[in-house]
Length: 111
Image (cartoon, rainbow, N blue to C red):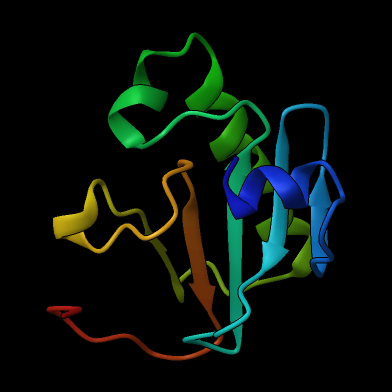
């Protein structure tokens, strides 16, 4: 069981800022921007590639992110979404998640 599954099950605390039947959004414990929220599907899938195969999962996840952006009043021209697929790409928790970063200017390449 990953740390994200424990957060979903409310076994460990998290600063939850969004939740619906399929998706959970919570603040990152090591934020890289003024707004840094992780969005995860409640169904455990390992990464982006697995998630892409699950009927409706990506639609639900990105709809949740859109809803959060609107509710939080974030600047639409200052949002970065990041997901890592595999350890070599920097994935450290093997439960698909999308980082939403906002509240500062970003540069390219990211790293």
